[in-house]
Length: 444
Image (tube, rainbow, N blue to C red; front, side, top):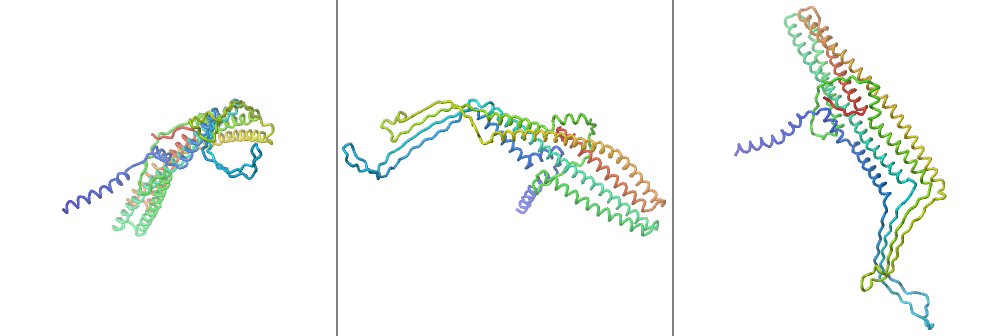
């Protein structure tokens, strides 16, 4: 019995712990983070709803070419009270008017359709189509914004993870150096001051490790917020800094960007929509031709044969002309406003192009800067590693001081940190350049 209880307890413990362990082992790639960030973004969700609304406007404008149809029906009992007027019959005798009641029924069917409106309905449909297309590009651009934010937070987390690893190595090296100094002190090869300096160095690196750990956790929390990650569920990201370098041409990147960047495409659609809207408003000055069909029936009581459609009915078919002779300058103001909005949309498109070109130029320069910094930092790390080796060797044979070893270790740590910063900045600039030119952001 006791063994069974222990076995059940072990199984229950495994059921609770194993899923968490399995989830903790999940390492997210950049592509996975981008997919999660887009899928769970509240702003992307809002733009999806805007797109749905704009598509409904297109459907509504398609309906403008069809006839409408309205139906009404009434059935009830009417009560008429006594009349205060005096009524006489043909013989001149007064008639007592008492109240009476009766059943009443009615039915009507109406339909209207615009036959000709000088193309206003067509232009309105084209306007709604272009706005819907702009909403599609707006949604994609919002996804691009989410991608840019996730890229920064992802690589910032990778940055902090690698810097923490560098700091851990610095603590390990400081501890190893302290052990060596204390061993030399015990045999009388150095002074107590060397031991104190080594201990101070170890304490400083330990404090820096605490700071690096906190920064890593903050970067992780920031990325989790950007991904809308559930609380209580852990995750990690790949800390590799390997990448395939690219050598883009600025003129080619700008040309591709002008034809593929989503916010520019949305601005172009809005310029087109504004142009169609101007034509639609201008055509509202002219008369319109419409057709109507009417049918109505009413009766005060059901006949005995229940065939009530033969009693008191009427129907009509007609074509009519509508022309607003004077609308108190409403149409003129609408035309001027529509023309103004078209010019504003053209200015917005031009400014968006200028801003996009400037952004591509900035990212292009950052990419080149990251390449150069990476190249220089790699050389600095190689030299700093050799300098640490020589400083430790000189101290071991008594030709150097503890300060030289501490300085050499600090220079190596700084060089390693600079290399990480340069690689991360290059990766961010590379991904941002892909996003800014309208390409899909992906990693090898």
